Length: 345
Image 1 (cartoon, rainbow, N blue to C red):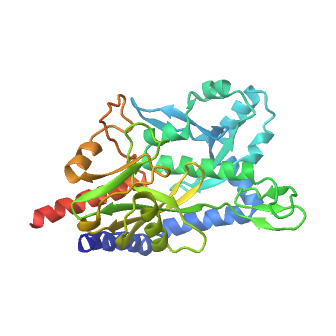
Image 2: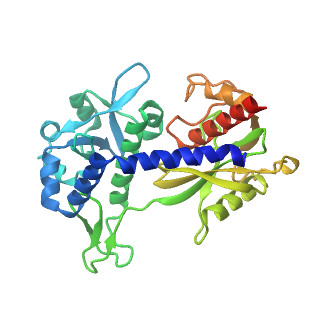
Image 3: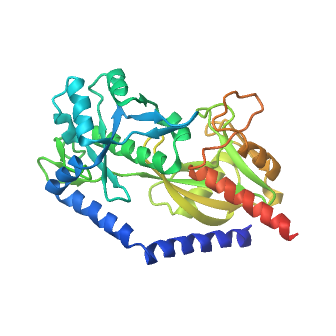
């Protein structure tokens, strides 16, 4: 397993090298975004020429594109002004827009929560609908899903950090929304993510997936858990697997990382790990997991063919996380390594 996964790390490094070697446009965008975070006047100007994505109480506004799929709605400053005026707002709400990115055309991207307005009226005006992010995550293209998730995370962070944890006094944000400052102590607060390890365990022929009771019926995923204070990535992986399924892992290999918006803003650090086939008997902690089981390559291949989420779930239906979830990537990497291994036998 270890030897089979080494090419994945080499490929990932090659991808990173090509980006950093030939990325003048990327560097330009990143420096532009950083300038907007530090210069309020420039950020106001960028907002007036940028794209704005609307939310209502953290629920994103989407438009149907094809049957079963949706896309985010990018509105201009003037279009949002019109929506606000027609919904009874004076337009001052636009000042609360938060910077979330920059398009390849160097157009700044912002998000705005219009929770004070009637959602039905706003949705009708924009020819869209507000869809909960847990559902939208399965319906959006990968790049759009990540942008919407980032926007929701930043909006939530601002909503729950209006007061300083040290002084209890009000905090004030900069124009970009990249920080908040305590009004009495000048302490600066930045948006944070909680580190979470997610690991796909293999015994050489099978991979281990589990499910929590809160998961939709039939959904299985890689094991995951929050890192404890002071832990390394390897220590967190070993502890979580031991706690949840009673196994001792070895050969922990880092795969990739991802921001994950559920239930709040998490930083997912994904890994592969192995266990000895002679010590693969599960001892599931049912306070942590509803179920955990080993899956063969054939079972994984069948589960990958199930639409996520399936329209009709039978008691035996197993389905997997969406394609742009890091858990899906881990499962695909494992399945591909199994197929390569079979091809060399």
